Length: 227
Image (cartoon, rainbow, N blue to C red):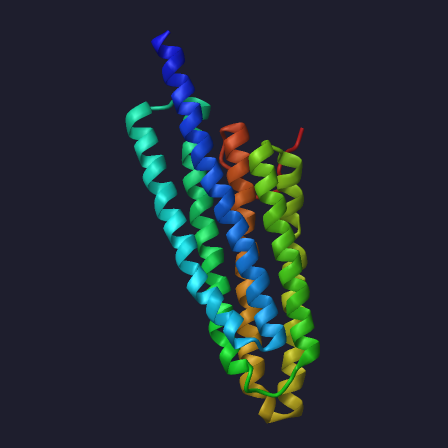
């Protein structure tokens, strides 16, 4: 009876941690969307709100770390339960880094708001952002559902983000060669594009964490086996 009670409490505590994790992911997706809108619309006030919003994400990571550490120390979970606890913290760490990237983007918005308009390049970045947001939403669904197929689908989309970043690099290089006045703005946009590429890399990490959670094995290079 006591063992059943302990298992029930463990499940309840783990569900609360998962709830916090998914809330954190939702905030990160919103931060990316807001940072992108601020960049596109040259909305300095919205960019400032993104920077302030990063604190909530950092606080959630701290909360998840504290809850997970306490859970492991007090409940001493084994096997799949231990993997769940470890994976939760790993995912939170990647989410925090993606949140940092949204803040980084917003930091450059104020500078770009004063620069020459480069609508085509900005639209390319918007497309990258949309893909990254969709990847993050899907990989968190994969985590919640323990769905390797969704995890793999999210992971392979990172290749699209990499290709978009390469295409934008070539586009901005052309702008810089055509007019030296484009160099500063293009440099900031290149940095932002690279930031989205790095966000995609962290989403790939989360997909690999899902693989570990479901199989108990560390992911190795190649496709995630969904069989």
